[in-house]
Image (cartoon, rainbow, N blue to C red; front, top):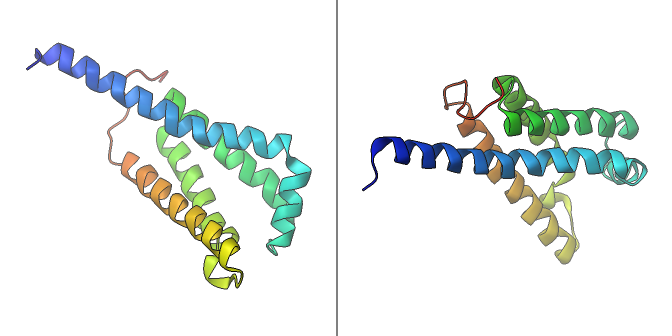
Length: 138
């Protein structure tokens, strides 16, 4: 339908848009973790996360730098692993819906758990895309 060069350009632009959305989601949340640090630490403590202030500090760094790596296409493999290191324990410890007895809270936690699992799947798939990524800074 399109000449190869136009189709490739559209693919690269679509991939960049996807990177901006996915990476932006994580970078924004990393910033918000710092902005709402006290509230986030209190929430982590309510979930029995050990050393909640330290955990939130490092979790915030993981998602901020992971998200920025995806957005800019720099240190991509490292950025992806940062996000994986964040997603697995947070998903299992913070959104453990199977431990919640209240029906509404369990439903909210299950939705968050499944969202995180889907995001984790998308992140893992990024490992299969050869680097350097198109339209990246590196």
